[in-house]
Image: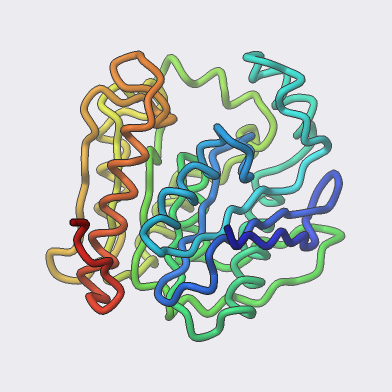
Length: 279
């Protein structure tokens, strides 16, 4: 497997944004995977984003996993205690800093692949950050260099998984955690969404999402400027917010389904890259 691991400057903690570039020798679009808040993205077996990269690679689709800066990267040390992990790894990190990391990653990949279509695919907070990336300007972060607004003209497709503009009431307690305690106001998110212009928008939503209500995700998706009938809101029945379980049972079926949708769009837009049918 062709995997290149790159470290670029980040805004916080260890000041590193880690990138895993997978299958970039294949032609066609390069999918940028942005993890959710306090998430990890690497090629370790069982990591959701690594699994997505491997599924895309089987279809000869290149990807880049983006893991933002943090104080520590030993997620497994905390087991299922996600709150303790968030506080220890991201204590003091702001949303602006996290967003700065996303802009820096996109700028690096765009510089490396200036002619290649880049397809952002963000999960939860990563989807929200994708909208700021495409529809806003880089945030000012004290101590970090000023980033120029990236060229997003070569970004025809956007994929968003489980991202809304308002949390469920029972999920509001999470707003006390790092990054989430400094989110921009809802009107700023709406303005970024309105300024986002893509040819194709695909939004995935799990019917068992306990973080965002469906109407919150639909409302945000409907603000994005999308050409013609190329806006899709796909509900995955029985799937949770993280797209890791199906009807309460751990399953890779949700990510397989989403990768199949990405592959079908690639085949539609670039039929010459379609794999021949298996015999």
